[in-house]
Length: 259
Image 1: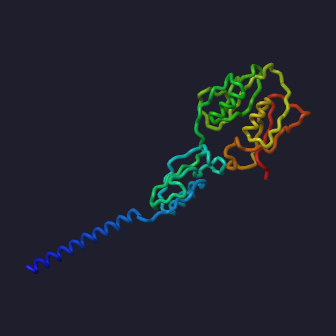
Image 2: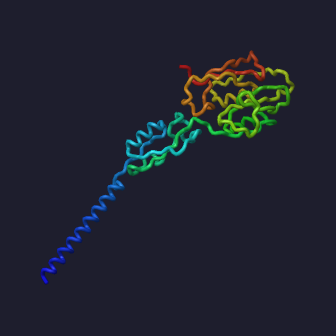
C-alpha cells in the first residue's frame, strides 16, 4: 500500500512538473514570437527619398510597403522642400511606439500630375476665367487680344483650340483669346510686378491686358511648392510712366535670385 502511494505521488509530481515546464516554454516562446516587451520609436521619414526611408525603416526592423502616390502636397507640407519621389505620408506616425517587424506604409510624391477636365471659358470675363482655371488646378497662360467683344472668345492648349471636357494634366497653362472691343491697340502702363508670385503677376498683367512672355527660373524647381509660388525678381519691359505698352504685348519675367 505504501509503495503504491509513493508511486502515485511520484507520477503526480512528474506530471505536474511536465505541465509547468510546458506552460513555461509555451509562454516564453509566445513572448519571443510577439517580441513581448520590446518596442521602438517610429522615426520621421517624411521628406526623405523613398530609397532613404526604406533603408532606414528596414534597418530598424520594419517591413515597408509603398501604398500610394500623390502629386499635390498636403497643406502642412506646402512650405517644405518636398521633391518628386520623396515621402509625404507615413503610417505609423513619427514618435509612435511600435514593435519591430510591424508593416510600415508609405505614400510618396509622384512626378505625374493627375488629369483634369478642361472647363468652358467661352463668354466668361477674364477674371471669371482665371478663377475657374484655378478651381480646376489649371493656370492662365497668355491673354491674346483679338478684335471682338471683351469676353473670352477661345481657349487654347499648346496653341490649339481645346474643347470643354478634354482631359489635360493638372497645372497646365491655358491661353485665351479675349475680345479687345473696337479692335484697335490700346496703350496701357506696364505695371510693377516685382516681388509678386507668378500667379499674382499673371492676374496683374491680365488686368492691364498684357501677357506673360518668356519665363526664366534662377532656382531649381524643388525650391517652389509649385511654379505659381515663384517670386518675380526681374521683368522686361520695366515699369516706366513715360513709356506705354499696347494691350496684348508680352512682359518677360524672371523668378528667384540669380546666383
